[in-house]
Amino acid sequence: MPLQVSVDDSTTTTSLRLRLRDGTSELHRRLEARLDLLTPGLTRERYRRVLAALYGYYEPLEQRLGVIAATQLFGLTLHARAPNLVADLAWLGLSPDRIARLPRCTALPRIDGVEDAAGCLYVVEGAALGGVVVTRALGPRLGSTPERGGRFFADAGSNVSQRWSTVVAWLDALPGRGDAVLAAARATFSTLDRWLAAQKSAQ
Image 1 (cartoon, rainbow, N blue to C red):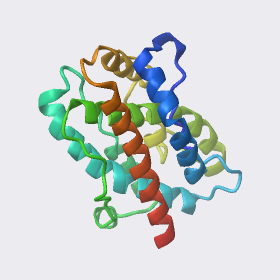
Image 2: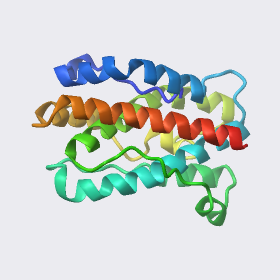
Image 3: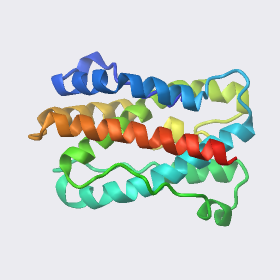
Image 4: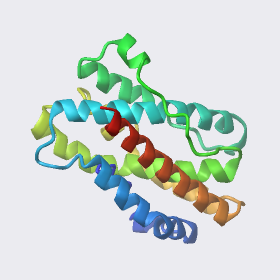
């Protein structure tokens, strides 16, 4: 966004968050370079391809997270963002049938319990926070707005900063194993990076 997985909110610093930030920093930089959405040469067609690839990852990932969220997230509500990607892709000209036929990632991170879900949520919620940077850059280049082609990065319908604070507080109170949460966060970064690389190669 770079995907701009932003994790520097000093008002909500916790030891687990710092460990997650430090333990995923290299993977975070690699993913930002892979997406490269802040390049001056970004075109609408390339933006569409990136969103299509992200949808192919987020849609099955959120389904998997939803199974855990229904029973094990202890009061933290899962905020789905795949519908925002559908709206953006429709604005960019993809029909519902074309969106339904987009490739889906099957090599997702394991999400078998709370620690796995926590590491995954750290990545996707941090990405939403950083999407504000992308939103500001996209408007002048593509003519998009949060309501027209920019819903995903603007995370339309959500108070992103408040959501991030809620997630960080939840992480801080999680009675789980930090090693497992970090491993899940790293797996989320890695599987997303590999998926995006594979989709780029297939184009």
